[in-house]
Image (cartoon, rainbow, N blue to C red; front, side, top):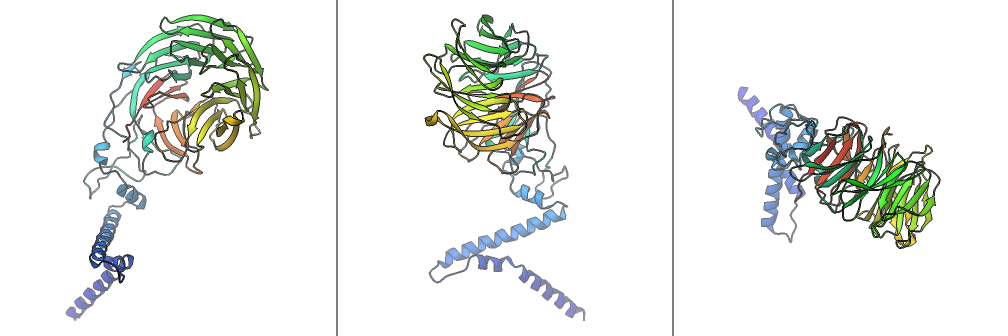
Amino acid sequence: MAEETIEKSSSSEEEKNKAVDPTFFSCLLQPSSADSDPQYIGIRRLLLCRKAESGVHRRKDWRCNGKGYVAYRNYIRRPRNWESLHAPSHSSTPGQSGRWIPSPAPLSLLFEVDSWSSSRDLRSGYQASSHRTSFSSSASDNDPPVRKVEPAYSFVGMHCIFDQCKASVTVLKFGNKSSDLLAYGAADGTLTVCTVSQPPSIIKELRGHSKDVTDFDFSSNNQYIASSSMDKSVRVWEISKGLCIRVIYGISSQLCIRFHPVNNNFLSAGNANREITVFNFSTGRVINKAVFDDAVTAVDHDHTGQLIFCGDAQGCIYTVNMNSRTGSLSRSHRNRSSNNRKSPVTTVQYRSFSLLARGPVLLTCTQDGSLSFFSVALEIQGYLTPRCSLKLTPRVHSIRASFCPLLSLEKGEYIVAGSEDSNVYFYDLTRPRHTCVNKLQGHGSPVIGVAWNHGENLLASSDSDGTVIVWKRAKTS
């Protein structure tokens, strides 16, 4: 009887093995035909058989260790050199102004898996930790775990920190075609110029405004800075001497300012009196004005200098024609906000080319968290066509956004923006869901400004506590 039961059990095990025999499935997946090469068919069946067996064993082992499907899926999708990439992070605090922080090992493909824990992986022999460092890149908390961070927008950590400012840093920019010249304006009226090259240091601290610095711009040769302020004045600074060489007083708060990209003798400033005023840089005299429906809060030029794009306090976007020789202005188009609640425009940024639009594009951001992306028809005097938009959480602060560098040929339109929760977020405006592709953690208060350098390897962000963090992007192959 015992022999019969043993035979029955062995026969039942054989039947089970036959039922899940991977060889049978490999034959189904790679059937043989009359004109096929038998050697090729045999090799393909062998590979399919081994792949099926390894998958079954992996899943069984993973199930025995108490982990689920999500953890297994992320495990098999991990980079081959994950152990070398998962290096310990250097602790840092934003307590030393301009301190150089050495970068850890390359973490360009660092990613998190919520289902991973610190328990030992019996199969691979290493530990996978879900610890999140203060400055590493990670996926959004609201989104499900992603396979890996978009390689083009991954960061290895903080490059340097400037925290000598005691007031909110309202705006920051890198110099024209410069990778190391950085300036930022604060709510106490100061304008700080610094270098982020090794070692990071402050070059000049420009004092003259009595109220918030609302905007500033570098001249084409980076020798001068023009700044606007809530104290109703526009100031022109010579960076090398740290002196204010010209003051232009207005009758209302000056909210935004830009140098003309072709004729640097022109300055265009938007103010709370619903105007864009063109000044002569050399004399300070007013050349021309254009009147709008509300206060002009953001402005930018196209690359030819013939168009000005501006936003007002009601969320409308205007296109204005400008003569590069005479400075004359004429309104051509207006794009009204679709929201019932009107919100001031905090960002207007022009880019001469986009893979999505196959031409020039415009990015706008409003204080209520609306990001909009337009294609620009230069042949129709800058007519704007909405392409996509994204609604974020409404903000209390005037938080700005910026285009991300064109680092890959993948379709999508990536932008970076600050937030009230002290994080820097990266979004893909073309995704219908889970638009957040990455975020940076390190600030202790709402992040207001963001800016890329010319080399596109550094990203600067500022917060309401006066801290400026320069993030170093990971190298992409």
